Image 1 (cartoon, rainbow, N blue to C red):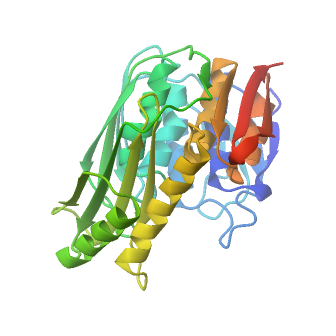
Image 2 (tube, rainbow, N blue to C red):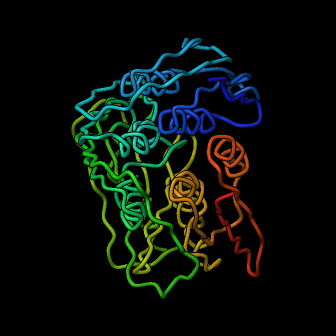
Length: 338
């Protein structure tokens, strides 16, 4: 079978992860060139390489060009097998992105699977564990996707050292999703997770978050065990049928108040838009929509991941996406079979 040709220069690691998922599901090989071509450090980094090697293991596949810094990869999948798997990234690379790469393929397996993924669980360039558990997976459950996750230990960037586990049940056919309306706010909460950061700093972050986004359920949670220091502000809103979570990660030279402001501003922007699906969740739902064969979601102005992700999906599956803008910044993303 002739490989699908993909140019990775216009996107980042998400294009590769989507291609790996779809190659395992469809059996269609691909050749990607110019991987992460416009990034400051192009080519495969350790977290991307772990995704490739994990895809090879769960599918009995092969990969040419699977080396650190490689800008070209040819991947051929075999048959996806359920079972117990353990993958360690070796850095603070995201375990949640690795999970999202493997999850759609393992839903097609003929047996249940368990995953133990080691690396970063709370990384500013990826969805934090709580987003996967409380935002992403509940929507997938509505579509028939069966999976549960647990955070065995928190891994902040840059130290990593975290551990995520997942139990995945075969879910061979996802159901279409229609998510275009949002009800009124039912509940909200703020969590400041911290390790090896002075408690007054975490307190200032929580106070600043509450000032911008008042809610009754707000606490500081200390993650005592584990390597490295880190702090993150997680802001969550529950609208009954859908939740959204935004985050702000601590970094050197940035005040606790500014980190809190980033998280709360993102949440207030989402609430003001009145779309049910948050910007990051919309990108993560593109592949499930395509696997279901159809669906429609209303979201905020899409980020740059959406068109590049769509371009990969449409090369593997007989679907067509459309994105149209409506009032108040709402965008409607529709997936249809071709």
